[in-house]
Length: 464
Image 1 (cartoon, rainbow, N blue to C red):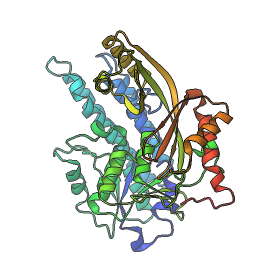
Image 2 (cartoon, rainbow, N blue to C red):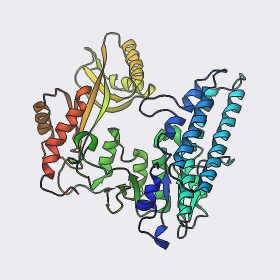
Image 3 (tube, one colour):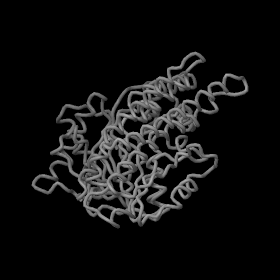
Image 4 (spheres, rainbow, N blue to C red):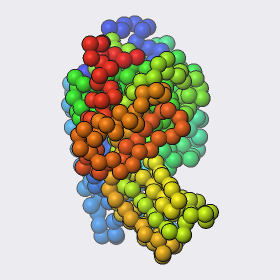
């Protein structure tokens, strides 16, 4: 969204004119960095307004300064894409209204919770919902100003529930927001956040924009759902293996998309993909700045021939429980799973043998340590350990006959990378190599070179 002026020439308008501008619905996210400032930094965990507010005491007003910084960042973001003074003024006024409205709401809530009958903890999800909607509403409003100035009949569709007294399900909220829109003559710009009774953040956290997007596609019976990114969906991270080495996927299916999500490389949120798949709507992932390129189509079709489509990786923690008396005794698995669920540890993969259960989890170290402590207390005779590791995954719709495990091990051995585990299910969709965390990047490069790059030599870039 921070490059939305460029998108006018490539995506929003491009070579379209008159009626061809319409019959589309755009669902937008916040400008870069805004949601981090509102909630918390997605990578570092540094608290934003939300984190500061929920942890503030009566005399701590640091969240107010943080909220003011969000307003300043929003104003700078739209000043970078808007030219006309009237549009900038309208956007400044919009930001001021939303930021000060949120500030008043949080001050009132803080005052209310100073009384013993009210607890801030009961309102944390609502606070998170309120703040998260500010970023998408801002970017949608600004985009409409930009497009209107270009002669496009764009319409701001605010699903964030700002000052709305009604109670809606997600479906009802979307239907109400789009009810009066004429898709033949208007281009709706819709907020990625949609306020609803169940709470999008509660269930989907920061994947809510894609859930809103997919729900709109399903409700409108869209011919295609398209996610516009700054890059193509490729066989590996081009920054890691080199832009000249990667292969654009071109075509894959929702099965592969699920495995990418499991490895933290979301083409789309799993719940959003489920909505599209059940509605029989194909998903296309394109490079927004290359409008003539069809990108990658994701549907439910199997592969015509076996091939490796993606090599990716994820930093994880290996939580291992060794109990000599485990063999032949039932119940260890379910008990461990209860503890992992209690501490909200996401399981990427697992392995078991006669007396050892290892879960590879994607979670903060402090949460993993809490689970480790619970397991140690529950099984005092066991040995519980936590190790920082990495999983390099080879993924494809059909890997049968490619000898991925053998060739992958040979490639890693050639680079003198120790493999601490190989995980492969009965379905030939992915193979995971567990390595030391500091060897993860090198492992991805080696696997990609061995299993993907040879297939593209002397062939076109597209591997469909």
